[in-house]
Length: 351
Image (cartoon, rainbow, N blue to C red; front, side):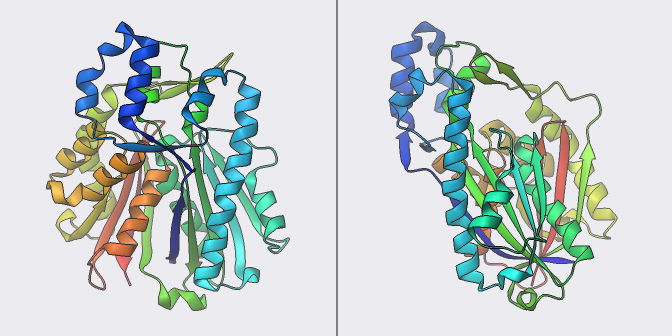
């Protein structure tokens, strides 16, 4: 088994109020934007964090320049996160056996783990595990992959880095509904998780134990949520069918996962879905027959940070660790649906 030791999130310094973004879009988009006014009133986003001041994005059309900024900002945010994990946990750096990185919003070659290993003087034998293109699934997927590593290396620790800087793919000169939705709701952020194996000294001081993990593919759904590369960078294509797919598949898939652990959904104290949009949060809530209070952390993440994709999972996990009133041996289910489309599940137990 594996254990979640410390969780941290970090966000860029530039905070934009949603009213400010709406005013800007009304000036630049005019009638193309008015069709989204009703949607905005129900979307709950209040603030978002961006890598750059808002006015800088209007002339940011070069994909190469976008990615240079992505690399620089990613390193700044994640170096702070790793320093926090090391300082708070007091883990011996020599115990770090793996660094896994997750993103869907930028590229780095070599991937980020190399810089982190050099910066923090981690062992040269530390394994690197970079992933790209998972969308909102990245957070749960990353925890699950680290869990699999630690099952085979129970004396080791591992670090997961999740970075999503979606604002660097803003395209203000495109008026498609997909692009306007991206402009309205996407936020930037970075999260990090320190996990340890069952035989590591820190395992007795952790909040959650990861009991099991799984991924379930929804066949023939790969076109529901995609991202194209254009002359000016990534262009997002969201699909209104995605929340319907969540609502129609999440209960049966979750039960399938839980049943193999001889657990019923009524045994789960906390359900932890990502905070991507009102439609998706409501889909998780309705599909799993949850009350509003069960998804309050998802709503708060959306309100404060917008849709930060896979980082939303890390933010919600962090809030749970810091505030949840959960007794030992109680169970939590970390879950998400992302590009593919596929569902990720992670079964957690309070230590």
